[in-house]
Length: 124
Image (cartoon, rainbow, N blue to C red):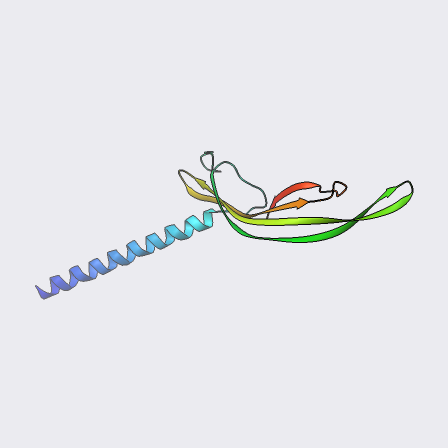
């Protein structure tokens, strides 16, 4: 009788360990399924469902750069102010969970003569 109780306890421990391992592996595969690509994905690669996007603001900063252009044979040097905003964005499939994640980097250039005038968004 004591031996049966011991065997039942061992079976419970083994089943519990296997269940924890399966849950751990499922969590790992969910993270591995989220690709980090340099372009934004709008649809699930498996079932083609529209991804639901969520994000969190990471930070922002400002910087400047100089550029030049020529007017009437004279070189004009202009300083362009650039505002940067960075957000961590995630794409979730309603069926398959997390499918895509990246840093969304948005730059707003101030000078109309700057080659990247207005807003530029890219993913890192």
